[in-house]
Image 1 (tube, rainbow, N blue to C red):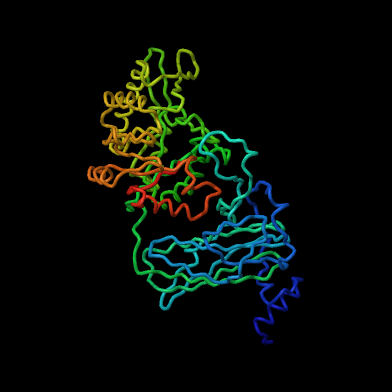
Image 2: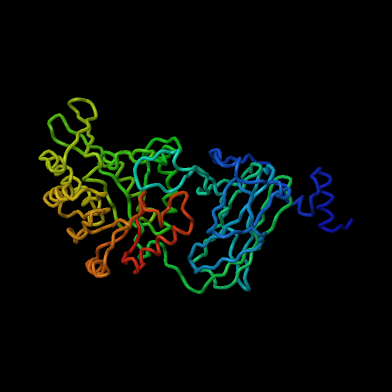
Length: 496
């Protein structure tokens, strides 16, 4: 018996008892999955922001701009757009954004790409990736850094975290952005490629979206070859806490691999390492775990265990982040140091002012040993002793100790005191965004092979990467690094 494939699918739908929502309904029947998703906080605005009564039944979807950041609980007012065009060089990563929304519960939402075809050429579906964007709690910009009263700043949810889950369950009266990433191969043939994105959901018709991928006949170098000096500080301890893993265990490093690989692919140049106790006095939710263990032996000599430090640095280098190692810090935010005291059988915490004799003696012993260790590893020329926003008097004292004990080591400084004028030889200077560095000063530093960047922190309203910041600010922050109008002709960015 000969019957059309369309009729066969229709008969099959009836036989298996699937509601016939359209000829694509049976195609949407997917194997049942448990969609494990990040548990979001309750939206504090969901009772006040929107009326969903005008939204049509079923799953709604449309392409929107990658610069749009829409509320989770507001029924979106967007024109239905079922096609998108993205343009990029060979070797470039480009993005698009699909928005999903529904007045009712929608289960097991899944995305599937086709191959992308151009005349005489094809890119596999694997060049594309779809990730559901999760919402996190945020508020708004306040009066600079420091402690704030939460009641003074209205809370809301912001789409921020990209989740790698295969499927997603949507609650009624919510939106869900989907971030689409296209990794154009370096050896791709230039041309206009056309493909499809299909969105499946339980008991919903399959929705199909057209994607055009314009590949320009230019090649972007590998991230390791980019001149732009990107320095985003890493925080390994936070990864261990989120996944409930022992710090520096095999499982911890395995969990960090995809995260740090993304950082390497973004052009990261610097490895963030620590020398002793948490350099920032636990300003983050998680304290920084020790990478180097200091021990005062019973005979009053010192030994230093570099096991975690060595593994962390080599791990990052193997991923392609190998230009610089910035080690924090000769000047911690609370002037404290930790060490194991063998005689006492306990961990001792001491507070030492940078101008004290004890500070110079203890740090000199470590710096001399650290230099020998780095020489043995072949890392000495890449390594800087790093400081963050330290007072001029402390900087002067610390740099004197460093000059006497380990002059071979470089220096890195996040500078909010215009120290670059007093210490023009510092290898890696990162000035606060509000400071002005002249073209002449930067040109002189660049001629000597020195790095000049700028940083943003909690005191900078724009541009920044707060969870409430507009998405385009991340791009503008990079452009701002070469904006001659504000005198920041720098070579990169540090986000803290």
